Length: 481
Image 1 (tube, rainbow, N blue to C red):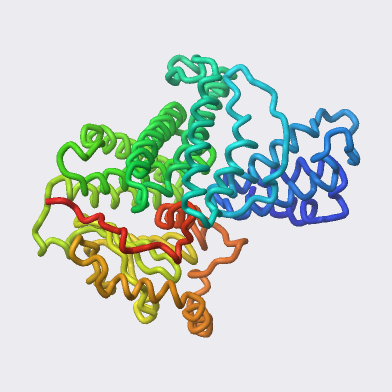
Image 2 (tube, rainbow, N blue to C red):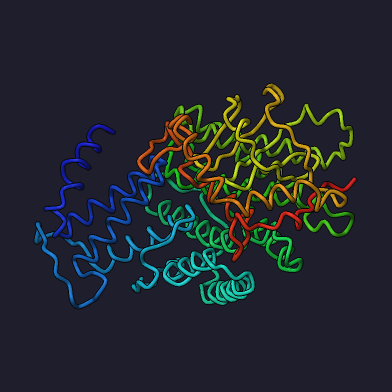
């Protein structure tokens, strides 16, 4: 199957002489979804960007001014629907990958469907969230975040109540039309809650706006909970078909967000922990999602779901520590640690004792390590007890330690970011190619295709605040005793 698809892509889709027809645009859109289903999100984004360009050459961005050819006059291809599909998919992939969209000013109409009018949010909300993520003014970004949040709330009030009813897969045949529409409704729910997650994710850790941080953390936790419950329902209803891997990516982001929200909530004492009564249920939800991922991995020998399960399992182990109030310093070396490596900023360490930032050490970066490594230019590493202790963390953020050498070193790294980039440019050639996969990298080269990097980029930097300008003095996420 893969060889046939590669042949069609090389012989047809990459032939620019064939781009003047609607059928050529259809092939590009199908190729994009093929890459999505295989988990190659970056190639899907490149293909959809090419589909948008092709649609513009055909005049689809200007209704009434079409200039395309049709190979088969009997085909029922709808130019307006194809334009909407290409643009909306490109925008959503840009949002997940943290990339700018080429269609921020594009307009298209999507007809209302019986299940609701969810797709109409695509041309309105997704480009605005992308624009918010690229702002350089924290206050303007916060204002836009609040505006988008209110528009989302006003939008869902216009949908019929039946759209939000619980999923009903009982009694449905897997391949029936009723099951198809029910799964589509579930995906509409997942898409909406993904927008909520992407909107509020920058403020989960933002130290500047306390009230917004609490609101956004609750919003992210609630949205992630809803995403996981629907993904579990879909996987439980049809455990045989692998389905679209985009669901695994979104479920991974939701699971990471939900567990991180609880890890951060342990920093609060008593009644300030607003998620304390949800903790047991949320852990059970993530563990059930883990079971679905593991069963899919065993059934299809799927590396992606296996890595998703491994990462979420380690996060659950980390979250369990503060809940049990571990305080023995001697146990620190026996715990699982999530290390997020962000270029020119440092390693973000998430463990039972809290969250800390450590500036990069070029020598440490060259040391090979075991465990699970996910990502490319920025990557995630889950350090297990069996790993050699190649990383030393002496800069845990505590109320007394803020403003000490860690802050100075991190600030210096930010200030001289360009010099660091130039100084290490020669060393970059000595790093294995796997550490810097290109846009065409396959699943074996870069498992999560940049979704992991984009997730932590937005999470750590905050809206309107570039990542290399993040103020580490505001980081105070030490677990309360």
